[in-house]
Amino acid sequence: MIGKDASSILLLVEQLAENLVAKKLILSTAESCTGGWIAQALTSVPGSSLWFDSGFVTYSNESKVTMLNVEADLLSTSGPGAVSEEAVISMTRGVMDNSRSNLVIAVSGIAGPDGGVPGKPVGSVWIAWRWEAKVLAKYFLFAGNRYEVRRSAVEAGLLGAIELIS
Image (cartoon, rainbow, N blue to C red; front, side, top):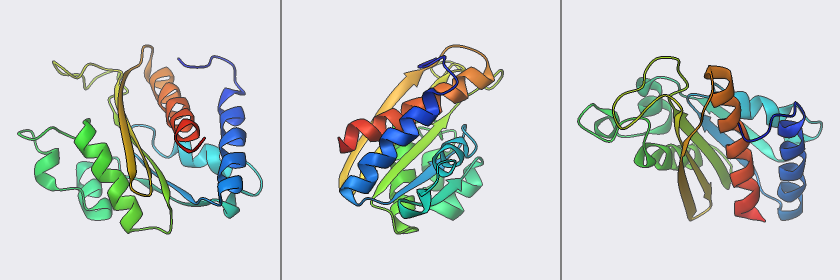
């Protein structure tokens, strides 16, 4: 896990919020394995309506296609799959097209305890950040149980957004 302290997510949200307000940015999320946890953390602080627009929880491949316009071929067994750099980058693009945001965090991964495959073990998570035309994506392999993998993904998503706009 990135941070073991219970307040680490709140501290990251507060730091991100300060940066968003200072830069007059609006944030949205696209979440799969985190199930809306990033959006929940963001909206837990007062004043988040100033800088948070929307959260898309696209857990199934179908929802990624219908809500975020991710190409179905990209998510198929013959494509890179939902847990891939291509998928999370496409998810960020879909959020930009369907929100008023200029900053997006997208996450897709395998939280476990099942679901791992060769080349994509449990704990594999891809996160992408899009700030207008700038896009970054990063692969993580988090250790721990389902809760710990998801929590680490939330923290990494928030930290990456802070680093991108700082």
